[in-house]
Length: 412
Ligand code: ADP
Ligand code: ASP
Ligand code: MG
Image 1 (cartoon, helix red, strand yellow):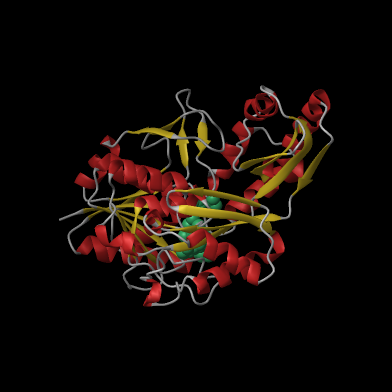
Image 2: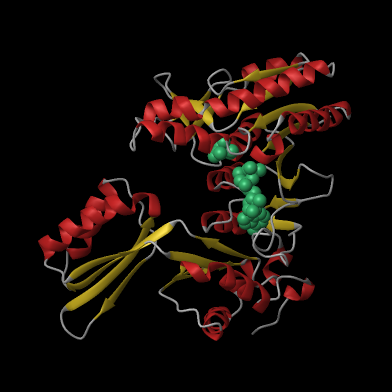
């Protein structure tokens, strides 16, 4: 007998018929002798609808109240699930985040889970109940409702699985697993059977929304075995595991894209100590995360500085930089929201040379200009014009032969 945590995303619980189907699936797994904990998202589109309701009232809703509002989507699905399970003769009980004591910090809209009190879950499992938990929400030390950030139900599921020391955490979604790239923009994308936590973490951080970033961090830290799979069939999905020797044979594992960043450039900035701190300290004080940074030194004692920030913080960042730009006497401050970041990820990059050259050559062959580049041990990213995103993903996917088994490349 195993303890299994299953998470179903928004499309899998998109209407009452789909919820019934999910309930039947959970009951089937329970009948095989397993203890079942289910974490649910809100119905597809529901969270967006709730956010837009608040925005009908104000551009800048109070963060505490926004969390109270957006956390209601999950309350609907967990209740419907438990109602449906009971009509099928199974005891199921739904729980909101605060009822199973998913404790978080107080960062509304992006709260971090600090602790999960497993005793109510264990007690209900002991009574033979299916425990159904609302994803995406928690409670802070003062009793306020918090939410974990978009896609946060994945994190709830993994955190609950880690706290319970579950045998398996299954993430059910609308695709058959983690693919070499987003299967919705590249029909050639191939399902990856086994992937390391580190590769999936990079993929998630660089735009693959199949798993939320923090959920993968949690899974890695607590060694939670993850199975990402489709809720619409019984096919095996992707196992997310610790790094295995053969994984390094795959030079490139996946291609990702991210359209959610914007670029800010300051030209002719004085090239002297303290200037970077003058620019970036107020940005971080405003809680804006800077991603890529490049600085070009000119022949003179002036330099150009370019960096990226989330599009959601672009306006705020521009205001700050325009103010600082004046103070430090730079020539111009320019902003560009029409950018995208495409990235290649793979453990094999550690031992293979020539990947960056091949990536840049492929983009050049399709007339796609590269604006910024960043690399780490297992990834290469390039910022390009947003309008070429899909093209760039497809040609890179092709160039690295990810669509078929030829990917065990010998490029060196
Ligand atoms: P859920 O609602 O189940 O949480 P999401 O929409 O958050 O589902 O995540 C699944 C989606 O992630 C897929 O429909 C797919 O478009 C997208 N996706 C992006 N990159 C990948 C990838 N590399 N592998 C699989 N899916 C991906
Ligand atoms: N309902 C939330 C969202 O749409 C959380 C989730 O689905 O994981 O972001
Ligand atoms: Mg998701």
